[in-house]
Image (cartoon, rainbow, N blue to C red; front, side, top):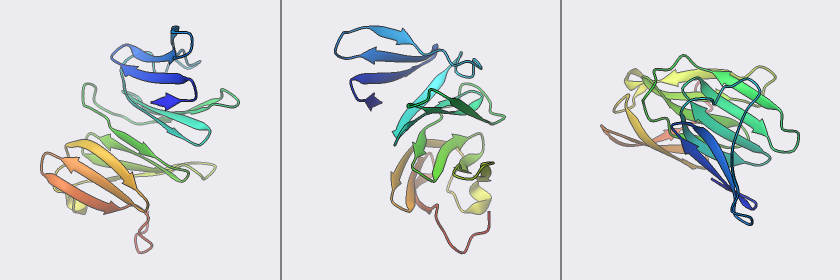
Amino acid sequence: EPQDSNLWIATDYGAFRLNRSTGEIARFLDPGQFTAGRVYDIKLSGRFLWMSADNGLLKINLKTAKTEPLRLNLLPNIYRPLVVNDEIAAVAGDHGLVLFHHRQAKPISREFTIQDGLPSDRIHCLYLDGDYIWIGSDGGLTRFLWNNPDRVD
C-alpha cells in the first residue's frame, strides 16, 4: 500500500515499510505485538493505516502513531482482504464478511454470511465503491450495500 514516499508491505512475517526515496526497509513493530505474525492486507484511509492480521484489524494513526486493535477470533491461514473508508472497515472473516463501524467511540461489528445473502462464506477479494462493497468469492461476485438505511446493525 503506497503512502507518501513509503510502500507498506504485508507478509507472513509481519508488516514492513519500504522508504522508496532511500531504499531502506524496516519491520513495523506495534506496541501490542498485534501484527507480529502474518499480515494479510494493508489499506490507507485518510490519516489512518489499517492492517488485517490473524488477530483481527489494527488501525494506526499516522499523525500520532497511536494503534488501536479491533480484535476478532479468526482462524489463521485464511486470506483476509480488507477495505476501509472514513466510516467502515470490512474484512473477510471465517464465515463471510465482518463489517466494523469504526467512527463510534466503541466500534460495532457485524458478520454477514450466506444466511444474509452472500453467495459464499469464502471471500477472496473486496472492492469499495461508494456505498457498495464488491465481494469476490468462490460462489461468484456480489454487490453489497454496506450503508443500507433499512438494515439495523
